[in-house]
Length: 421
Image (cartoon, rainbow, N blue to C red; front, side):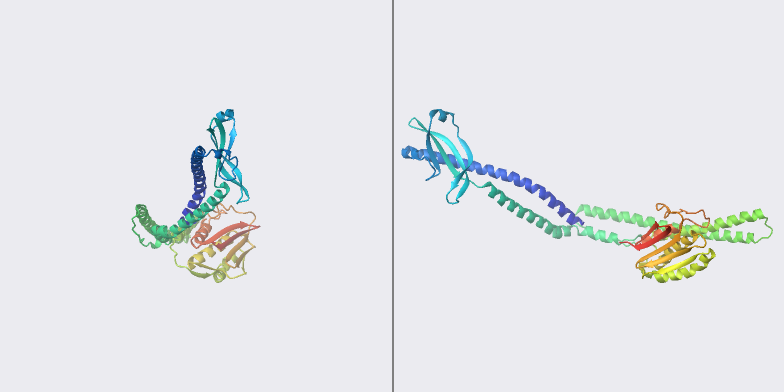
């Protein structure tokens, strides 16, 4: 979810809680004010009626509400002395509505010529259910109006405010250490944005410098190692051709040659992994995996035949990936070499290509540990020829090429490559 929508959702949720609470408080405050106003009106009507009684005593004979908003009926002195003014809500039949409607009533006692009378004064009041309905409708309109206003503000005002942030994010998404371009920073009046931009710029400068130093070190170290290794191998090979060596010396020389050859392969593999992870293979084209695999199988047929293995290519569909062609060659080659090294003699290796997917299957008696097979220097066997980096290189290539390399075991070892979704 985008930041603007995230804040809108939060505001909407908060308003959903605050508005009902505010509405409840507002409703009871308003209702209290309405009651106060009606009670004041009833008191005023009582005084007016008492003034009227002083001028016209016949008013005391009005015992029903038929002709007005009050009624007067005689009462005993005992009841009168115990009586206190009461304000209450009640129902009264209304002719115009043909139904009982709520009214506010004042019950009080008056005295006239040593006689006591109970007087009831009424006034119409707002129906609470109608009031609640109207208030709810108004609050719903208010809520949706506020949410709509927040969304409009987020998509206009806040979008402009956050423009430098999104500009920086888009540049960071396209940023590559191996081809670092200076960031275009939009200076703003917002201190936090300026601080973020300056901090990220310093961070990137530091990382670019460290990357370049690391890259230079790896290249120099690899180059410097290759020369003495080649010299040592050549001299040992010349020494091995000396017929004056006894069997013990020949065995020691053979062991040294094997270890130097392994060191040479290890150096080349580590350099390759470093280049892959540093994204130094940045050229991408559409690679035809079917054609590439066919060519590689022809190259590996002789090696497979040496181990009495058969490479079977099964085409079930067309497979093309957008990636560096050299990395595609390295990926498929490493998986084929891995299968050849770890397949028992006399068996076959199936390479299955379907729509957008590459899979290679070879026989195996037990499954491999998924947690470690793609780690550097992991060896499924004790072969001295293996550097333990083949699958690590394949996983690194897959990662930088937006592919997924997975392993499953279904009676056979199966390595599958698919596009990332």
